[in-house]
Length: 218
Ligand code: AP5
Ligand code: ZN
Image (cartoon, rainbow, N blue to C red):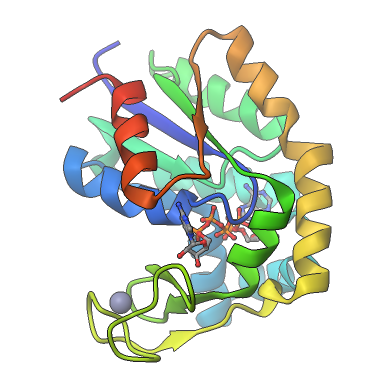
C-alpha cells in the first residue's frame, strides 16, 4: 500500500503524545489526536465539546458516534493524502471497524498499529506528574522530563497546565476503561497482521528507536 496510515495504541500515559510529536516531524504526516480535538472543541465552547467534557472528566469514553464523525471529517482533509498518524483513535472495536470501512472505501488500510505498552503503576506516576503546553500540546513531566523553566514550554514558550482528568481517581478509571474497551484492539490488529508491540518502559529516545524499527521506513 502506497500510503502511510499509522495508528498509535496504548493505555493512557503510555507516551503516545510524546512519541507522536517525533513521528509526525520525521515522517511529515499529520498528527490526528482525538483527545486534542475534543479538548479544542471544549476550549471553543462548541456543543460537541461541552457534551464530550462530561465523559472526559469522568474518565469515560465519548460515544462512538461523536468520535467516529470527527475522525471521518478530519480524514477528508487533503493533508492526509499521503498518510496520517492517529493517536487515541480507535479506542473501541466499532471505532476500528468504522476506520477500516472508511479507509477501504478509498482503497487504503492501516499500514501499522503501534502499541506502546507500560505497567499500571508506572502509568499512574506518569499521568499524575504530567504537565501540558496550552499552545502546542507537548507533554512534560515534573520529574521524568521537566521543562527548563518551571511552568513554561521548552518548544514554544506556552504556559503549562495539568489536565482535569489527570487526578489519581480519574486516572484509575481511565485505566479500567482502557482494559475493558481498548485493549481488545491489540488482538484485532494482530489478526490483521499489522500490529507491533513496543516496550514503553524505556527512555523516550529508546522507545522512539523501537517505533522507527517497527515502522520500517527511513
Ligand atoms: P486522550 O487525550 O487520548 O488521552 P489518553 O489516551 O488517556 O492518553 P494520554 O494523553 O493521557 O497519554 P499519552 O499516551 O499520550 O501519554 P503522554 O505522551 O502524554 O483522551 C482523553 C479523553 O478523551 C479520554 O479519556 C476520552 O474521554 C476522550 N477520548 C479521546 N479519544 C477518544 C476516542 N477515540 N473515543 C472515545 N473517547 C475518546 O505521556 C504521559 C506522561 O509520561 C507525560 O508526562 C510524559 O512526559 C511522560 N512520559 C512519556 N514517555 C515517557 C517515558 N518513556 N519515560 C518516562 N516518562 C514518560
Ligand atoms: Zn508549547
